[in-house]
Length: 224
Length: 224
DNA sequence: CTCGACAAAATTGTCAACAAACGGAGCCGG
DNA sequence: CCGGCTCCGTTTGTTGACAATTTTGTCGAG
Image (cartoon, rainbow over all chains, first blue to last red):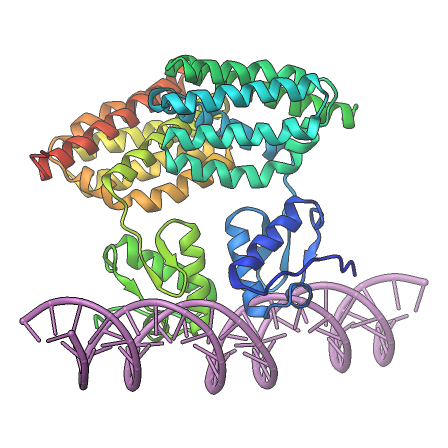
């Protein structure tokens, strides 16, 4: 019933991007049914195109499809978010170590500047700006690592947990906790110190996991 | 032109399984073009079904698709195989640690029996039997760990690297090297010792990476 | 003889329509 | 009044055909 979609050109790959954006932006809420005909009308594309897009998004973990019963936005539970963060802990530490080995002088400058910007964003209370810089940092580390396989997996997982990530970033005091962790990762990579970089990444993701559990405990204070 | 496919029922999900099997079994060789119409005829399914299957297999990393230029079997280079093994090293160590925490008494017996079977297979020179037990062990560890996210990722990666895995298993002396590594993983899990299990898994995958590089160096002896 | 452009074939992307399956509303019988 | 059954609406799964794009083969000019 909510027809608020902005349809660009009805291209083929645009549809997956459009639906993906609608999901990560929260326009489509978890467990919402995704009827092919409706999406077809919303995005001005054929049903076959929408169908292909849904299949693709299913393998990306953003939507759930059951035989003859349609597709719906996949709801990632807290438990799953923790699992995802555990996997990220392993893979981001791998990427951080690789990045520390391969980082170039130009990239060192780039990372340090990114760290400075993050510092300023936190000091200025710009939470959403800090969140964006956060994503940029993690992506840049993945790119520098040259580990395309790990980078691909991490990218997929990011899409699934973006909602929890966002909820986390909004918690008061969270940026002050994560900023030094991020700076530690940057320092270790720029110092060409793989083991310290891996350890810093592990510590950061461990902190994320703890914060996830804490945030959940706060929302549902008692569990009898 | 090679029409050797055994077509079961033309169901929808059967087609992805059929094509996947054809790829991992080597019936479709790397870089082979996958024309939708041909597959449609081979598997007695509509072109749309084949198309959906190809999209699904693309996200599984088994086929490569480019705009308006069709799909082909993805060829995983040695470099990519090493990358995959590095990711596996991180995730399997995670799963091994989790499994060591959660393993039940019945599962301990099961794992020990599996270890015994592997020992016998190596002693009897049953390479292919050992390879199958190898897969069973890794999958069982993933299941026991309860880390469904990591298990999913690992399953996807297994499909991509099955060809290299197989080549490795065929190397003379390889089973004698990997057997004690597998037994060490089993022992650590059964002893409820997470850190030792993780370390054993890391060591095993490290050995796999070394063997991959060695096998490549043997095939292409000089690299000027 | 080689290089460039044009035309034809092949292949993919897209669309609209048909058939099958699931879910629920309403009806009938106990 | 309640349980089970049937019928109907909705949604997905599938099919076939059409349009757009790329690739290949051929012809002519330099």
